[in-house]
Length: 176
Image (cartoon, rainbow, N blue to C red):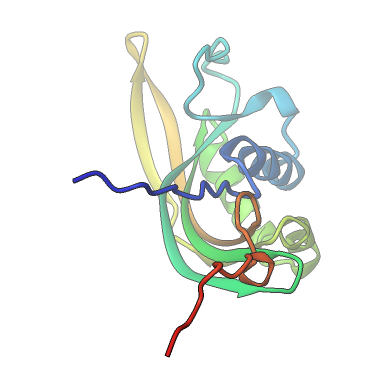
């Protein structure tokens, strides 16, 4: 038995690239590093790794969990509002890795610095503990420090959602 059914595709109002751009700008501002020294950890064609004596930063979103969702039905449109919790790892490499992680962490405690996140429907939930590590790189060891963050992001989507009020009632004849 075959059943006709149409799914309604819903896209997010913020793509992963847009979220990465927000984080990139935030980290450039808090770290004071040149924008070329702050980058997403995973890239299809990663740029050349800086020299061992250069401090630089990479970041990634390791976990994205939808925490809440709600559909709001209006007269002319419907929207799905969602809130996601993002686990972000900031990894700083080089001789100043620990100090730069501390600088970023302190900067996140300044409310004015968080305005950038709020403009993009994001909020800081928590800042984790700086973890010092060493990473082998070309036969030598490179200083590395990781700083985990938890962010909340709100999105609204309207693509493909048809307001129930706009639907035509079926042509049904009721007989006694």
